[in-house]
Image (cartoon, rainbow over all chains, first blue to last red; front, side):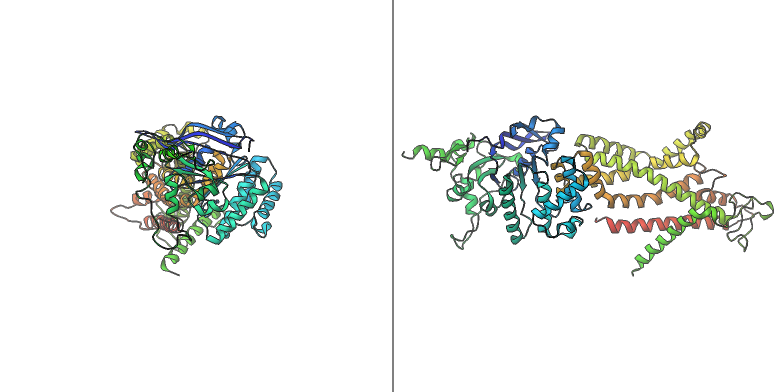
Length: 332
Length: 281
């Protein structure tokens, strides 16, 4: 536990530059991932989790821009690297898997060519050598008859096979960190399970760190070691996966669980979180969740609660004044 | 097969025939389009001259076929020029940062506002002043014509390509190509542009007929191809000149005009079919 983390993100901020000034989309996010660990970032759509992933790769385009913070991969400050060196980080040390296997592959190239391309680019391999490795990768991600499949076009493959090709592309140069943005959202439930199994197996075999971005708590329970809950551009809670499921700390996390169907609670209406997720331009001051929160206190509207260890569960860190107050009152 | 499909097949047939005849013209028994023969002036169509002869006794069939050839040739070359310029500007705009994009597209907007026919007439008139100099550098009238016409017909192509590039740029496979560390140029050339082929093809097939008509119009005005060259517009102009109060040689107008109409109709039909096939909108 004492070895330095593979990825260390400090106070990362990404903004949307508008005529009325910058609007934050990722607002001071700090997180770290160790080798071989899976960290899930959970949140509703629009909370900035995909933007966080793109920011790590420095792939935000104007009018979006990274406004501050630090991203260290194995000690290298990624935000300070020149663009040419950053290009050799992308795909080689950090790979990214996108949602939507339907459109994640180029329809006019064969799937084999799309894997070859990355290998040739990063490892200066010959075409033949690249093709040999591509076939081996297809084998590894469980694509049947790989020697034939490499010459097929994406539209000839099923959704599950396409997602496997996408994984093969990501794994082609043996990245130490894999960012998976909603890797299974668009897939059938049975295929989802297969892809998650595959992801878990590959991660264990390759000792890869995985940053999993999802809104699906079921997927989180399945593959993650640790979870960071994101709301409106900030991380509001971070905990090991078991702890989070047993004892969620932040009112938002608790509301998320209450809005999820569960076998134990049985039938009956699911509780929706009142109000809607605000758009970045409408993010309130103080704790961003306070207008929708049942436990809001006066200071929640003005001050930003810092992420602090929670007294009840030492391994949980939570950003909530209500929790802090309860901790202070609790008899020691 | 629907009537529309029959029409498209027929149009493709006409174009294929026109191209084949144009290419094979030197070997076909059609005679020299500029061979004058004074005894044969203004003969109506008959067995030896199927399309009749003109005021200098030249064979109208031969002149029409050579006219189709030069019109098609200039149409294709000018379309190629407009393709290169349009794709270049469109791709650059769509793929660059918003500021460059806005600058390029505003430039296109401004150019759109200029009445091109005036600009082209002006350009051609100016260039004609320098004709000896141009000819000394191996630049013929035809070259000037297709460069000028092509150089002023790329705006629609640029707009369409730009919009398509912007759409493609946000698709996951393009994002993913960038996330894999491929350089921007490679992302554009290998992942974006090849997927814009439908839009490019449609724009191209709709550009060619308008350029063919453009050329005919300019030649008709005496700004395009000049004698002894032949083009459909030039033939139409000669045909009209031959109409006098005492005599009207109808074949001088009907055959070149009919050939122009047929080629334009075929090109437009193919263009429409391409749009139906490749353009989802």
